[in-house]
Length: 447
Image 1 (tube, rainbow, N blue to C red):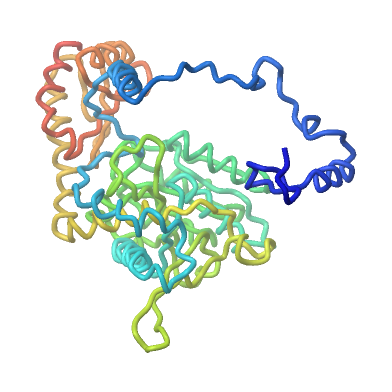
Image 2 (image 1 turned 180 degrees about the vertical axis):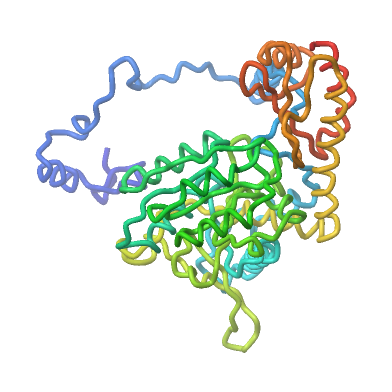
C-alpha cells in the first residue's frame, strides 16, 4: 500500500517507492524482495503469532507464574562475573531521563553532565592502573582483550611477529572472542602452562620469542589466584619487543600491584563488577594504555577543554573507529555505546570512595581465605588447592564427584561451579557473605 506521495505507508525505516524498489531489484537481477531470502517454510511467519490476547491483569499474573518457576539459588559463582552490592542511588541517578535518553554524546553543548561523568570514569581508571590513557566505551573484558591483541598487531605491522600468548587458565568466552577477532588475520594464539594456579614463568620464558606480539596475564586469574610474578612476565614480553597486557578488574586494582609498576602496556578486564552486579551477559570493558599508543586506542575518549567563554568543558576528543574516520585507518568497529554502563560504574566508585573501595578489595581476600579454611576442615574436601593468595574465589577438591555435589548443593539452594570431576570453584563477595555459614553446612551434608 502506498501513501499519496507515492511512498509506502507504515514503512518509515525503508521509505522506497515501488519504482525505487523495482530499480534496485533490476540492478541486482532478481524478481522480488522475497527471492533475496531463503527462509524454510516451517519457520516462515504466516501472519499469526499464536499467542492468545489477554488484559493487563491476566498478563501480570501469567508472568508472575512463569517467573515463580525459576530456581531461587544463592549464588557463589564467579569466574569473571562478580556481584557486589550496588547502592540504590546508582539506579536512581542513572535512570534520570537526561542519562537514559543520551545515547552517544555527540553534541557536547547539551551533554556536559554525562561527558563529565565519563571523564571522571576515565580518570578513575587512570588512577587505578597508573596508565595515562583510558577508554570510556568498551563492550566487556573479552572484546577489550581482543582489541588489545589487534593494537599489538598494528604496532608490529611489517615485523614477523604474529603470536599472542595467553594463560592455560583463561575463561572460555574470552578465548573464544579472541579467536574470532583474530580469525581474519595471520595472527595465532598460543597458551603457556600454569604452576600451582599461577603462570609458569620458566615455561613462559621458553615460549616467548621474536614471533610473540603480546603476552597476556591475569591477576586475579579466572580461578581466583593472585599472580605473584607480574613484573617478571612484563620483563619477558619487553625483552622480546612484545606488549604486556594485564587482565584485572576495578575492585582488584584497588588493592593489588599497580599495573604500570609491573610494566603493563595495556590493562583490560571487567569494570561491571561495580555498578552492575551480575548482569548475566551485560558487561563493561576496561581498556587503559600508555600515551604513546593514544592513536591506537579503540572506541572513544572524553577530553577536557574550554568553551567560547573560556570555561572548562568536555567533549569527545578521540574517536578512531570506522564510523568517524577512513575505514583503513580505523582501530575498531566498536559501535554500540557503553556510556550509560560506564556512568553507573563511575557513580558506584564515587559512592565508595578510595577507602571503602580498598576495604571492599581487602574483604575479597580475607573472606575467601576464611571460607576456604572452613571448607578445608570438612572430611573429603581440600580448599584451596593452590598454595597462593586468592581474591574472591578459590578451587576446592572433593573426594566425591564434583557434578553430584553441585547438584546436591543446588537442591539445598546454592549454586557453585563444577570445573571437572573433582574440582569445584567457589566465589564469595559482600553480596553472599552472609550465607557462608549455610553454604558450609550444606557442603558438610553433601560431601
